[in-house]
Every structure is written in structure tokens, then in C-alpha cells.
Length: 139
Image (cartoon, rainbow, N blue to C red; front, side):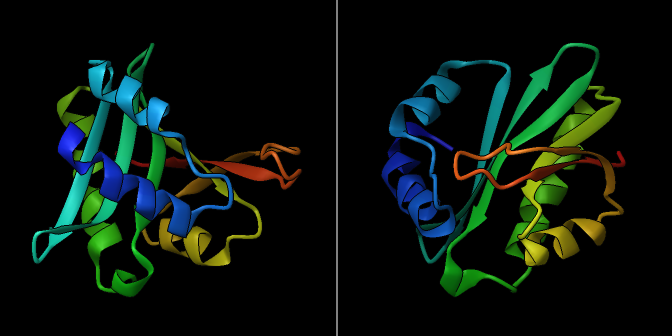
């Protein structure tokens, strides 16, 4: 992802999340060497985005992943997550984690295809009070 992709990524965030990330969060992430953002394009348009961050102790955590609603269920999310997992391996990560809304059954099923394991439930994690599950994906 580059700064030129930012407007398109913000549209994706707004379409995909009830509480999307602000522009500033992505801008800071582009300047932070610990963060890595990938986009997927179709016909020259950004239709998917995923961000990760390298943490201490050889951990990588997914910050965001979203696919434009018109492009879902076409394998693009799988490609993004597979690329992020490979990047984590290349960095020498020992673990890869992410949060998912308890009520987001589609996302939870998607992560299960990557053999995700629930580490714990995060009570009232989101601003609207919904719980999250902290998942670990094997590298």
C-alpha cells in the first residue's frame, strides 16, 4: 500500500466496518517500519486491504483486513491473509494473532479455514460493546 491508495482504502474500511479506522491511523502506519499494509487491486482499483504490525517477542498481529463487498467470496481475502502470513514467516515471527467480532460468523468461519485457534474472549472490546475473540493462526 502507498499513500496513493489511502482514499480507496478508507472507502473499503467504511464499507466493511461500523467503526472504521481514521485516515491518520493509516498515515501513521505507512510511516511506521513495524507496520506493513498490503492491497489487492482488480482492474486498477483497490478492492482489498490488510495491515499487520510486528510486535516484541517475534509476534505479528493483524490490524485490519477488508474486501470490497462486490469482490467478496472470490479468494481475495485468502490471498491477502496468505501473503500476510508469509510476510510474518519471512520476518521470523513465531505467532500471528488477530481479533474478530464474536458476531461475525463469516469472518470466524474464514479464519477457521486457516486453522485459527481461539486464545481468549475479549469482553466489550469494540466501542459498541461487542466482544471479540483473540485468534492465533499457525505459521
